[in-house]
Image (cartoon, rainbow, N blue to C red; front, side, top):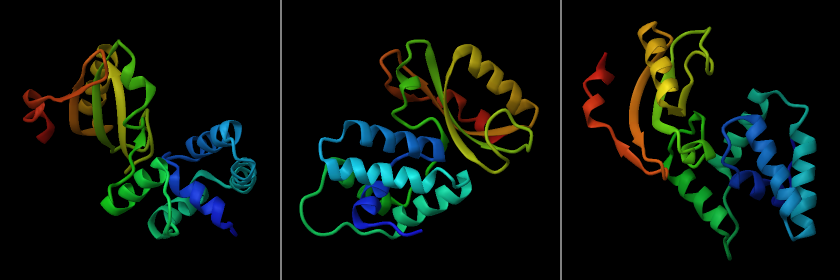
Length: 177
């Protein structure tokens, strides 16, 4: 797929881990960008990505995130964050983004990072690593699914009503099962 410099730069800054999230970010960029060139670039990328499957779309996005280099000169905050993400080599988790609105829901009390072990899981495909923000009730259901072998929890953090995360050290022994 041929992308011009502006399109590559915009894709480089996206943070989504699935096609629909990437398209949503581009839609917001198209809708709210003051620069008409950025709006046109966002519309153009969306046209190119819409017919693709999630897998095909994310292959293009991963390639841009790994291999694209920003030209010298001024950089936006989005570009600086994307550059730091690229340099860190951190794996992009599926599910909720670290700053997802779910995190700030006053009923949410838990953040979990887990691996999907079962092909018929409630979330994701077998082998996916995911992050979810859960209420107490959702967390109990999550624990039941772990006991059934559908998922394996890798990390758990408590979420305060204002969205702050605190590592749950009392759960560390449970994570080894």
